[in-house]
Image (tube, rainbow, N blue to C red; front, side, top):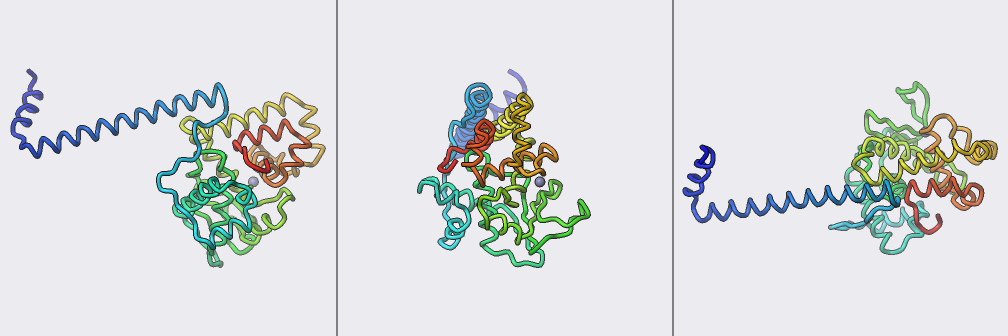
Length: 294
Ligand SMILES: [Zn+2]
């Protein structure tokens, strides 16, 4: 008998019945926790394999243990600005609200020369939730704070005036509130500042968690398929560039291309689908956007 086993037996012999009961409970809880962690790992392994090799679909998207609801006034802000929300079923509306609630709870909102209102919080949270609603991983950890300016602001990063900015180092999205509203005023001009900047944040976050997140795998793998489609069909690429359907800024680099194409997808799905169906389907697959209107 080894020395350590002897010590264990001695300790056990000295235990009172109450202590033995506590030890038993601790043992059972540890076993359950271990089994849960193991089951979770197995689940992700199979879901990732399914997404990568069979079909870009999650095994489930919405399961919440304590579903939270918004206040009536917050709900009416969603109704006013987020057309996507209005199209959802009642069940999906409640999931959407839960995600908006969680986003607002974990995000710090800062106003620079402007008071942060519920309208600002709900509109920004609603934008983030809309973009990730087809995916399960909606907690975009590259954004911990939202900073609002009333108008264009001077960016120390680029030494220029900006309407919006994603600051990866500071985990912040910075917005000119006037321009966020302007993005929502005209729904089909393919310009939406909040959608544009959030797409940058989602893109960076998903690149960081690609191996652990099946949502990220769907998003990034579909984006690779989209770029492969364009690289493999020069005529399609030329048609896209010449059509001016995407504004010129899209062709600055792959990050701007992604943000502009998602802005366009969100704002003009019907025209997009009609003119470039193959490209449209790749973007739809990135966001797993099987919802009314898309
Ligand atoms: Zn951009």
